[in-house]
Image (cartoon, rainbow, N blue to C red; front, top):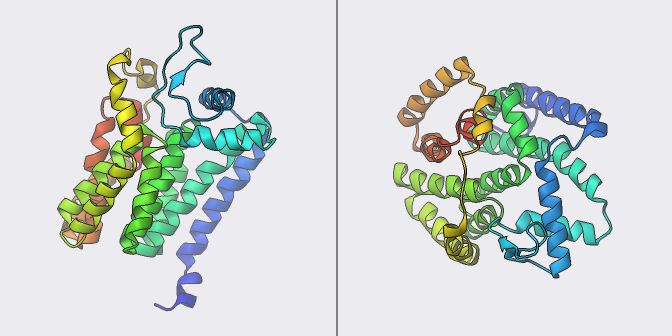
Length: 293
C-alpha cells in the first residue's frame, strides 16, 4: 500500500474525528480542571524538590518534623518542578496535564497500532477507549501512569522498528515515572519475547538495558519497601469498577485470535498476561490501567 493511500484511508479519517472530538471536549472542560486531587500531591512533591534543590528521597514536605521515605519515581515531579521554576503556574500545569495527556495517549496508541497492525484495528481500538468512561477517568486522574503508558507504547514502537537503544531509553523512562506501569511493561517485554522467538533476543536485550539504567530507582524502591504499608488495597476504588461485558467477551475472543495469528499479534497476549499484576486492585484491573490490554 502506498503512503498516499495510507494517508487517505477512511479508517484514519474516522480515527481523526474521534481524537479531534476528545481534544475539543477536553478543552471545553478547561474551566473545571483539574478535577481530581491526585495532581495536587504531585505538585506538592515537585515543590518539595524545588525546596530541596533537586530530587529528594526523603519526604520532608508532608510528614514534618521527621519525614518519611519517598518511594515515588521522580521523572514526572522533576518535569513539573522544571516548569514551575520556569514560571508556569501550578494550576495551569495541572490543567494542561489533565486536558492534554489523555489525548496524547490516544494519538500515540493510534499511531502505533496503525503503523504495525493497520488503520482498521487502530480505529476500533481508539473507538473502544473513547467509549469507556472509566478508562478515560483513569487516564485523567492518574497522570504519571498515563505518561508511563505513553512512554511504554513509544518503547514498543521503537522495538518493532529495531531501534533498540531508543526502545531501552523509553522503557527506562517508564521505570522512572510509575512503579506499577513499569512492572506491566517489563513483563510485557519479557512475555512477548517468550511468545515470539523472532523478537526474543531484542526484547530481552531492551529489558535488560532498561533494568540496568533503572538500577538507581529500583534499588531505592527496594531499600525502603519494608517501611511501606498499604491498607485495604485501595478499598474505596473497588466500588468504582465498571465492567463492560460485551467488550470483555470480544477481548477474550481477541486473545485467542492473537495467539492463532502471526507472531507479532502475540504482543496482545503478552500484555494481557502482564496486566494480571493489577488484579489485586479490581478497579485498576477491570476499569483502569488493566483495561488497556
